[in-house]
Length: 154
Image (tube, rainbow, N blue to C red; front, side, top):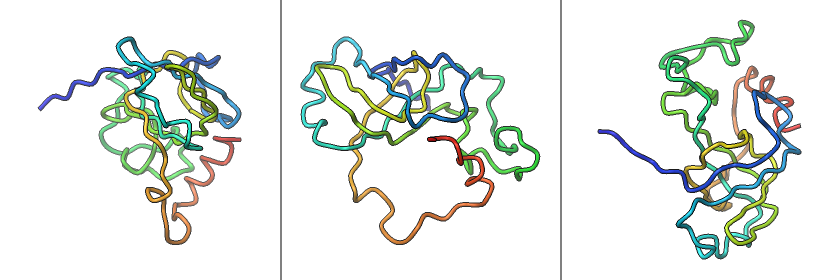
């Protein structure tokens, strides 16, 4: 079965890429595609954060990983399966990030901390609701993931 997705919008910012870290202060604008009305965003401004699903459009088919690899190619980190990391070289090249919602104006959304490059196709936008976040205790992750993310949103 093939799944065909059409972008709902595009990311606009000053980040042409490539970039690995320091996404925390980056402000981006998501502009909805033609055919979407401002009503599609009605009520979104009441949320503090949104989750943006996007397509890693700069990743070529021949760089996709379907097995294991060292995150960021760093041999000091363990080789783990592609589904045990958040790298862009994923089979379907889908990224997902929770970012701070700054404003909604017409068919434009301003966000902070979205780790997507200028021109990135946006597949979906969802409000972040407390009930979808972990509710019991801290999130558990291996040490290499903590090291990798140290400066990611700095």
